[in-house]
Length: 131
Image (cartoon, rainbow, N blue to C red; front, side):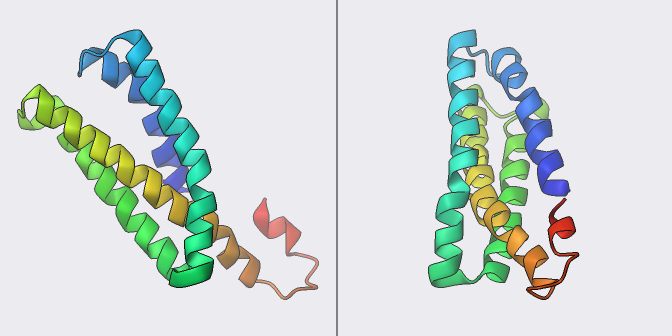
């Protein structure tokens, strides 16, 4: 639930933040927003593959959660609150977005695996666990 709140909350405010705080034009803000959204939806393919091949789903979920938390903190550091100059704020924001993208790829791809493992293969409640 936290991961979805983080994603939709950030997505809702991203363009406004880019235009009002970082003084990006509408076209550039929309391009960054579109790239972020596309990468967030594409990243779970790679995150699932990495978990299947190397990390395991539990470690991938933990790594994803940590990366998303770090990304959120970097996004906060990219605001006017800490008094950094505009170039550093933009860099922190972009690095934070990268953390959110990679973290989401690890987390979202593997959290459903844990839900699936809560039930036996033939358990009739298994399908309802995903809703």
